[in-house]
Image 1: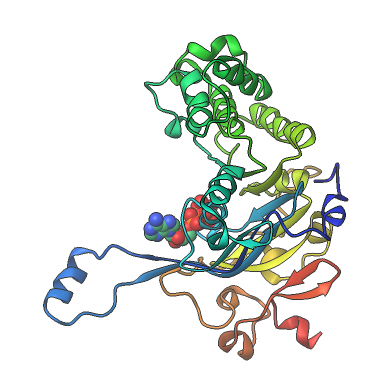
Image 2: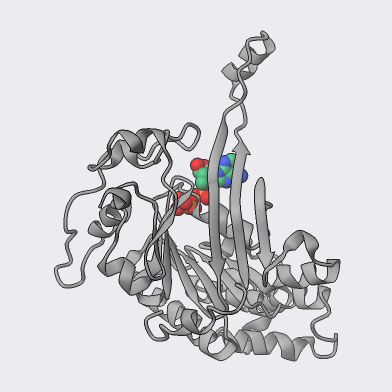
Length: 344
Ligand SMILES: Nc1ncnc2c1ncn2[C@@H]1O[C@H](COP(=O)(O)OP(=O)(O)OP(=O)(O)O)[C@@H](O)[C@H]1O
């Protein structure tokens, strides 16, 4: 984040708090009627598989804010859900403080899971409409023995207070709150299990701009007071630029570039990042600098060969069609996956 750019440097020596190595996630797509009939007739081809995440390395260092950007369907949420161990990778390793998740004891694994909480775009959908706020916020703390029964009411009040919600509202139901207040309930619920990392998946996208700013301020305040680490998934590049220390750009299941926020926004290297940033409205003009990235996003059911971006890339050449470029350092802390860097 721009207010604290040295966090990543400070923590560079320590093992990352959380990382994924060579993470792959594939989803088998449910066959439609025609495909089922074809299969029954014995003419079956394997059912299509969605290549949601395709060999990604990512790490979160203690205290940093990592922005994750890319067009819709490129695998951002899937990557976030794997980091929060909501879904397992098809292959690849989730590591917690440098240790493979699979090597942790049951107790360590439970704590590691609680340590990473996800904040979703629509908190209302994940808030039980029949439960009062004190039950919603207190439930996990109770289940995991984070406070005694006698302390629970005070504990819940503290979490609500931290999330900027008046504890006096704790006996109300979710429908009695505004969108911004519901977002705060979702945050209080996450805080109640004493996490180290919040994976925010379009966490402010559904809110009015003024409320967005308040929730973003809350995230940054919690970072200061609790030392939280964030993966901030967003379509809003302005928000990502404002809050991140480091930015990771994904395209069709792969990381194509990552760098410190200032470096990425001032010197994007990958043609996809350049196009994405060129689309970003600038406050000075309020206008986009030029038109949308040409062509459609290819289907993750059948990604293009070589560099996935080559069919849309103005600089693509023959090698880009046949060989996937590796993510390689091009400057200190700046990695990019583009063959053009080999010829420059
Ligand atoms: N449970 C699932 N079953 C089948 N396919 C899935 C599942 N979850 C995600 N996908 C597919 O995986 C791909 C990546 O989805 P994901 O939601 O991770 O992308 P995203 O970048 O977060 O998109 P958005 O910005 O629109 O939320 C998409 O093609 C999506 O349809």
